[in-house]
Length: 382
Ligand SMILES: Nc1nc2c(ncn2[C@@H]2O[C@H](COP(=O)(O)OP(=O)(O)OP(=O)(O)O)[C@@H](O)[C@H]2O)c(=O)[nH]1
Ligand SMILES: [Mg+2]
Image 1 (cartoon, rainbow, N blue to C red):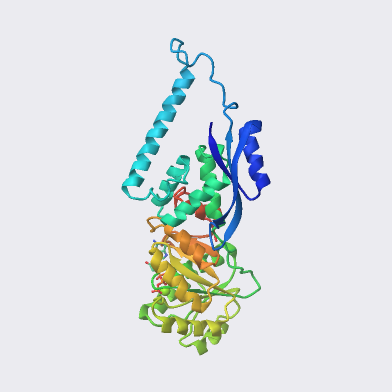
Image 2 (image 1 turned 45 degrees about the vertical axis):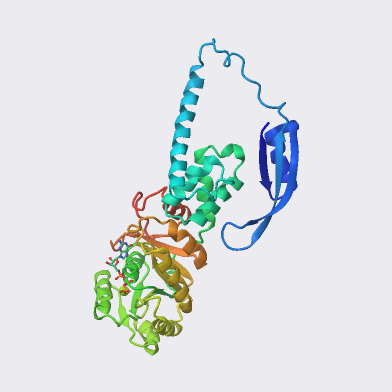
């Protein structure tokens, strides 16, 4: 007799699954209503849990012959046993290593053994433990018990779970003949200026859209020169605003352009005064879009602090840079979930204009899960 737990949104759904698995011989041992935490975000959802067993009569009858010690061994069956043995060995190794790292005890009661490798792979991808547990549990809930030992099905369910946590913004809405004002803000050294240059070059060279650049970064002596060099290479206008009051003029000075890209000075997330000053520039600039630039190579705590402190400037999108430098992208997942802003672009190296791509949900989910590599496929033109 085997006893299984079935969870579903309604009793009817749970019973359908019981009947499908156990057929007419199902014995219901108990039912209860549960509240489960939502995967991402807050709150709970109601679920019904049904504990069911077959009564033993429905257990598949032993195949005649194979249990007879004198009978010749079935070659296919031996091969299957070999595969199962190897897989059990693998699982055993994983469980041992998780126990050694003190990471399995709290999960053992509820994690199906088929999903232990999934959990281990999430930790390998640097997904924080609590989120890895929730994702694994989500996969267990979404799949039928019979699907849990199909690795490709588990992988798909995991990608879907991560995708559902990613909000994606469309690329910058620039079009010839209209004027879009876009500002990039963020901590120091994350790649704002380089990203502005990549975007400008792609607009002009690939899309035939006329960009103009404004810098409000007059703090570092080299900052204006850095952007001026790009403006000269791409052959586009650049103007400089030294104070918030000059910003509007600087935009007008660009003349007839379709998209204005504003590069701003990097600010330490700890420096609230400077972030407020940046907010003053943006009030004058009246941008249509503000993209907060975050380096994927930064630690989870630094990313969280940046998201929190830069909320003062009301960024409405995220650009993730330096994906090529990040060791594991799993830490990004909870930061992105908490940031509550869609992701517009990913940058994957120093090369201007190539190393940038519009954010793509499935690509980012696979990158985070370590199922795809940054430079595995050709760069997409912005
Ligand atoms: N590996 C890698 N390096 C990048 C990427 N984007 C920018 N960089 C490098 O990061 C460094 C800083 O880039 P900047 O564009 O000057 O950064 P910033 O945010 O403008 O810096 P501040 O203006 O000083 O705050 C440069 O060496 C860039 O080449 C990327 O996607 N991957
Ligand atoms: Mg800069």
